[in-house]
Amino acid sequence: MNKIWWKESIMYQIYPRSFKDSNGDGIGDIRGIIEKVDYIAGLGVDLIWLGPVYESPNDDNGYDISDYYKIHPEFGTMADFKELLTLLHDRGIRLIMDLVVNHSSDEHHWFEEARKSKDNPYRDYYIWKEGKDGGPPNNWQAFFGGPAWHYDEATEEWYHHLFTVKQPDLNWENPKLRAEIYKMMQHWLDMGVDGFRMDVISLISKRLEYQDTPVDNLMYQVNNYNANGPRIHEFLKEMNQEVLSKYDIMTVGEGPGITKELAHKYIGESRKELNMLFQLELMFKDNGPGGKFDVQEVKLVDFKKLFRDWDAAVGTDGWNNIFLDNHDFPRMISRFGNDREYRYASATLLATFLLTMRGTPCIYMGSEIGMGNVAFDNIDDYRDIETLHYHSTSLDAGADMDDVMRRIHIQGRDNVRTPIQWSDDEHAGFTTGAPWIKANPEYHQVNVEKDKLSNRSIYAYYQELIELRKSDELFVYGGFEDLMPDDPNIYCYKRSMDGTGYTILLNFSDAELVIPKEHKTEVLIKSNYQDAKDDKLKPWESRIYKF
Ligand code: ISL
Ligand code: CA
Image (cartoon, rainbow, N blue to C red; front, side, top):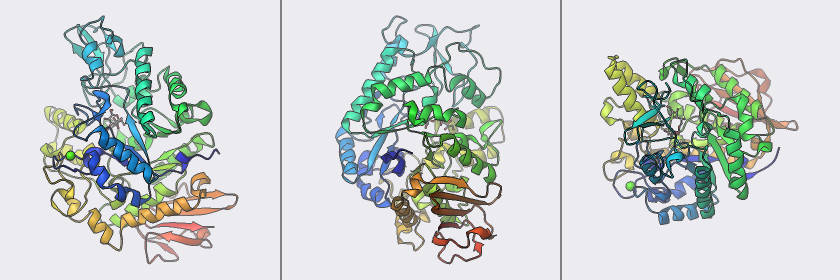
């Protein structure tokens, strides 16, 4: 196993809009992050993933970029960005940017040119087709609803968009486009950025037949027609050769359709493509036949199997990222823990999981104080395009709207986009103005100020666990073994190397459970309960034993 810094790093994701507003316009910004650099550094993390801060009309909160070289004025200036980068580097913290190159904004000048005429030099930066029988070129759906094609009157052709109509897909078949992207990546890396999180990178190589899908199911279409296209590895190898390999940086790829069977092709060290993946299998596991808002139960045994299989899939020639939420999926404490009776215990149990697994952990902002999902009663308080689209189409279809709201409360992306709760002040201390999205009313009980004063501080627990992970490289390079794969409530695994190591015991339930006998001889070095008992695991108790 090769040793390298990005395997040893502890990542923290910042969704800039919702982190901290510095100037009272209600939108989180770079100077807000600068104000909180000590808060971030104090946690002990050493790698930041910064969500998109590029110029964007914000149809999809920055995932629709109109200029890859500019900082969006609502986030600040290029000088602010450089200052942040320097402040972080001074503290030994690296920063990676979001790279969103499956699509651009329709307001990017490439697209504004491309749509002018069929012979415009930028035409071929995007994907244009003639319609079929008076309709779109094929029956593909877009992620957030509606067809994956939009008719453009000026030239009487359709352009392809897997996300919203304002996010036209880029044509990676065009070598000029690829060269532009590589040049742009070099620009940021030359500035000192430490790598990229690559947005839906699994979708960039298209199947040029553009065949109809026989099944009316978005995930089926994505997995079989959109993801892992024929030239994906050629493109990533080229990108690696032209750009990535020239810098001491890290990359993490994101995207649907990357199964554990295919993972090695993307991140095998010998393959020279990417370093690690945000695998989405767990994130989609509760999606029923009706999609993400059709929520199904996920059992702990399935959760464990998934991590066991992914660990085996990367083996010793590859690397995983370990995360349980991000800006697209529900808060981990609400999804996998108990955010009511056992907030402290389940938040710290999930922290223990993230920080003791094999793979680079990624902590989504707010987890370090145990922030949970939000449930606004009124749809007007929601901002996410996916949620709003689901609501309006359900309304049109005559659905039971109480049920629709209930589903939004469970799965909507705004669960993770409400402002960080800094204090009990108005708007959770996030802004002095009117926030772009309301704070989660839980902020009166759950906020940074209160957490830090508490003798059961979740932030302090994260600090201790991060310190523990950093104190022994066995947590990084040691092997992983699932010791009780079939237990319905307990996750028990071993991290070890040459006969020494740690046993991690996690009670994923509200019940008090008997401790499996074989661990009684080991030395307990950490529990999330101060009064841990010898023979019983309390609800959501986590333990780390050394042997
Ligand atoms: O959020 C999802 C559906 O609920 C996912 O399917 C999501 O679309 C997928 O993980 C890709 O996400 C990324 O690309 C999108 C953007 O909206 C997401 O915020 C981003 O993380 C388009 O750029
Ligand atoms: Ca602001």
